[in-house]
Image (cartoon, rainbow, N blue to C red; front, side):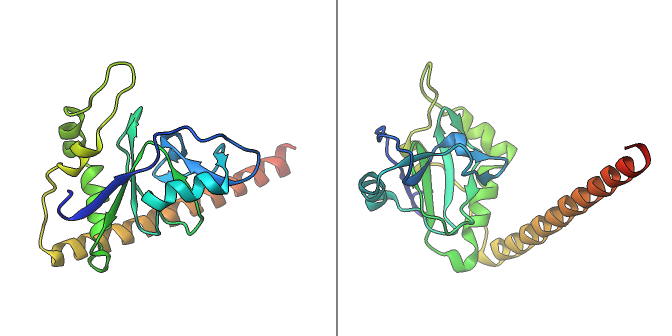
Amino acid sequence: MGEICDVRDGTHDSPKYQLEGFPLITSKNIVSGKISFDNVNLISKEDFDAINKRSKVDFGDILMPMIGTIGNPVINDTNKEFAIKNVALIKCTNSKEKLNLYIKYTLDSPSFKEEYSKLILGGTQKFLSLGIIRNLEIPISPFSLQFQFAQRIEKIETQKELVKQSIAQTEQLINYTMDKYFG
């Protein structure tokens, strides 16, 4: 992985949390394939700048929890500013070929999860070291196949979103009908 992507991590320190400030994303904030800003801890501008000097997350970067909850990578699809703690940051250097989608779905595949689960360290607190992540052997297909794969994934994700919207509309209709006839 380290040969095709820049692999870093966020802080391992525990910055002082504040009532206002910048979000600090940890593994608990990576939920259902997305970055969740619900129940996020906030940090000062100074801590935010210090963390992002080394590991600034950009749009399209991959985040993967590496301590406690391990795996379940996500692609950053927001332009919100935030910092990371105990999360691997994977920056694909050739984004025009949509390598980030290919890497994310490879890391998330059942067979690959099984492979890296054998490399997890720690007793009470499980973790996957940055060195192990950098040395993961990622099967690299020709860029044309990666691009086709990314296009198909994008189409599937769009279809999934349409189905979610349809389900929400159906639930609203059912609730309206129930209220009208039984309310």
